[in-house]
Length: 109
Length: 471
Image (cartoon, rainbow over all chains, first blue to last red; front, side, top):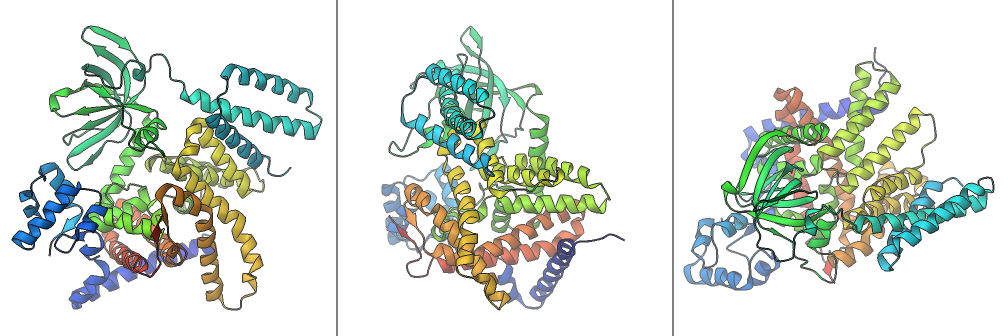
């Protein structure tokens, strides 16, 4: 038979643990929807809430000039929260190209 | 002297630094170098004098190599283009990098073979960074003809290293922006290295496997960890990892190279291949992995170090970590001495050097070996490694990024082992996806869980008081 070293045995053990862990989580997620949160990262970890961001935070992202950032905040104050990211297109200074970039940075609830 | 290579690397680096600070005449230094070489040959048997002369030669070599790297051949395209140039050029050549598509734009490095302005045509060389304002399916090696204006990149930051210097280190001095599909004409055939072409195809295949099995966010993080592809990482994730000082986990490092070497070695062992052949094949696979991940400085460092260790076993010599690290540094700097001023290079080598020098000393000082509990030993070791890496890189990070993150030590204690686990799971997922797709499901769930945990820990770490502050 193969003479496996302890590292190789650990590798095989690791593979089995990963597979079992995955199956167990899958099963638990089917039984309880809350478990799904364990393995689907929340959107707020990767994107910023457009309706909660302040002007200072918006400027820190360095993705927009100051004037356009101000216009976004003014637009929010005037029209209320953004219902979708498409609303950004109505802000002066945001064209299709800039919108494509902002889409990766923000989300709306 | 046991670590000659380490001293040689230090002198070589000193030569590069000196040459960047003072004006030297290339021919005069070359002449001096020749004289010293003759003296070194004459003093071959006098060990101390010979070593001194060799170290001095390494210093001169570093300086000469840097000065030489600034010289461009006469046919280089940048010699024909002014800063503001409205001339329409027609360039022939081939795609010299894996094209990247982001935000409906495509960018790639174009290697020139021929240029034309009106009816004047000449053979030229050099590289141009091409940015297409639309998505375009291209592959490495594709022969193309491009029509457009050429421009020099802007400096942006005059005080510290700017975009222009960053591109210059890669041998790129010109940009071409193309807005219309009619400005790009495909030509028959393809050029470029077959090995590179194979590596890029392999990378695409692995990326497909990752994206097929995971959602966007975990897939982008896993792609960065396994393949070093960071283009999909959201800005917020990258920014919060910079704040917590854990952004290094998004780069392919020595750990990944170690995993690849282990997987290849184990697979070959199962196939009952002889030890010598196994080592040679593993080194070849490491080189392919290095090319697949884009051959960035940390990967080259890890690949060279790994290869030196494996070859040491092959030739039955005791490997020395300082010598292998120096060998990696010399390898990179001989090819391109300007890499010494690259932040990635500095961080990669500074962290490894700090760990291998400080960690054993601190471990002995704190008598970690005498601790009774295994868990306590593990925690202490983790903290020490993280602390040493932080000590080694703090100055470079503070100077370049204007941020100091005391939370780094604590964050790395939790995040580094988790990142290691994710990388292992990532490789498992890739192998399952490639060879046993039916097994990829359970593995992908575990991957997603670990990535979610990592993001949550990172988000919590930067919320701690005094976690980071900007200078």
